[in-house]
Image: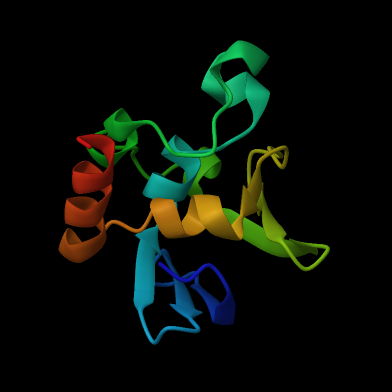
Length: 119
């Protein structure tokens, strides 16, 4: 999997965040998925739960439209990540390229992720 984006777009009306990767793959994330998978220590339940891959449960967790799932801004963190600013003021998660690619919800990426976790 490639982990370098060539394009990033946030569509507030569709509540979708799109990343195009340098291998030609396109990942489309709902704002709810991005918030459910926030990689900050607070959302992950403490530093002891921090890891480079998203928890599998974020793919089945449904988050209603609310200030916590309304994207306000996206800020670059160097050349390796993004921070998302949410309407409720939360902006602690740093979504690095590896984490975002591992978070891709498409069937192809979910299948590859399951295969790599199963050995």
